[in-house]
Length: 135
Image 1: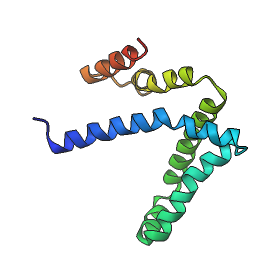
Image 2: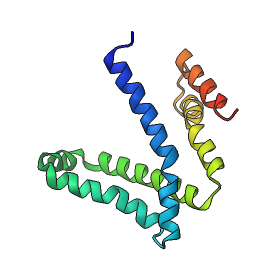
Image 3: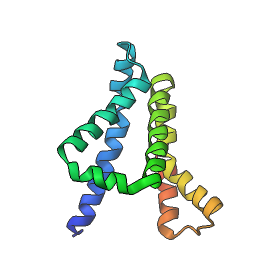
């Protein structure tokens, strides 16, 4: 029987995939109501950030100590999320989701090409699973 930690990790991955797979619909509804994808994406992340900082003041100090690295991570993650939101609003959902679910495949490819990492057996399995998704 799998450990509790492994089950928690798998359930986290599956719930994340479901949420990302279904989040396009509310963004399209907001776009049709006149709220741009950029604004709705900004509010989606800004409101919880401000609430979290207000309710958990100890986190603010940790964020300040993160410095430039945390800023760069936030900017790259924000850019990625904005690109995803705009793609699902203005693009064909099926194509966008196909590219999204192929991201593990490209991660292994880019890790090998850019970082000179040799894929492990698990890496090859990830590639096979992500390529198996479209079929």
